[in-house]
Image 1 (cartoon, rainbow, N blue to C red):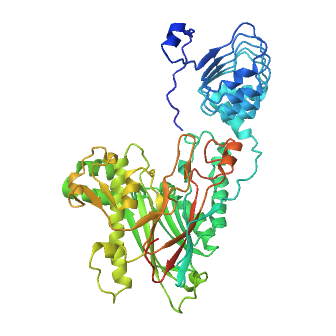
Image 2: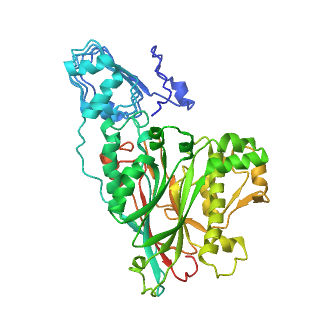
Image 3: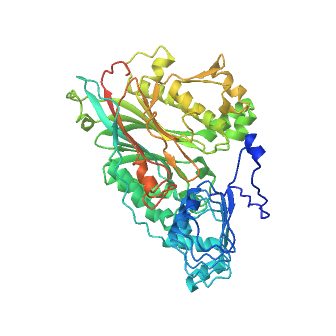
Length: 541
């Protein structure tokens, strides 16, 4: 995880008390730093109420220990307690996750609590002139980071397992109409190659390893028991060696597409670590009748070459994001929970897609263009599938009829918040080309035939299953927000309910500042929704 730029406090400590006239004039008081000196042996308990402190100087006193209440000062970035008589550091020091400098030189410290390893943003740790034990000194003599990592990896996590996620009902199937009833999971499993100590420094090394995390990931998937699984960040080797064989044992079949860069790699070892998207479905409920692949870099390269669009070539074609599509046909078992018995031989078609859109927050225009390409490709696939599997049906008269001739479930990690252009475009079916997310990038040629009166449109009627339901789907120390979605055709499908998140109190009580975590195997939470597909759907609700 990149460390934010940190400016150490001014060592001159030129602070003063405000004059009465300054107070009378309403001049704001700011004191985020505090110095306590004068051979102090005990600290006032009121000190631990000043939670806004970022700098605390306790050096050159007669302190024999740091009280456990030090953990209350969660905003501390600089703590200097050097030149005292301290021999005990409390475990609560680990609650100071914003700490960048910790100076404990010239004390009587022999051992350190493992919780100190949770201070993952520490840039300076001064333990000089302390009678450190052999083990502590062994790591400290190598580097502070080695010591902190060793402490974190030795920490025992004694907490309760995450509580069961609540089921949130949202609707019911159409009455008196036969319907396929099925569930869908969307899950970014966090591929092994990206799950590094540099990215997730707040997590123990052993809990970042694939051998450890894969058990929790598979447990999430198997326990969910969804009829359709859409996964992102599945590494090629892991798909073939773990996901496909293990899920096959549970009655699933699947398809997979690695990111486009796999084509540029020469060695098999490099190819094995390339991640991609996968779709699995229960074989007793669905059969796959067709599949499609979408590589945004290829589409962008073709688009840019045909119209010399430099932004398309330089910004979009260099990103190797992908999407995958499966056209499924229902089988009898999917009607087991139908509101009324289904006619013998009844089958229905369903298109399922999962995508992984570009990650960079600084490139919202790339995300938008990729999403527009995704929608365009899905429209083509719906047309093709409709003609292939409804050969006797009259051709649709309008594009809107075409887009909605087959139900669609679109899942994925879109790396876009609910206030983004991506979400607006998908959920509302329209977007102004002056939207801030384009950031003034010149896609004029690309937009020319895709907008009318400055508006880009699509004719899918898509709704987010998790609209206004949960505060985040991605949970790290630096970022918490909704970026994963399950969109569905509300003209065809009925949403029965979704799985909520674990109780946020569990996160607070166990001081979980980000995921992955020993009890949470990915930085994304799996989304889970249940739908019904009525034979003759009534009007959307």
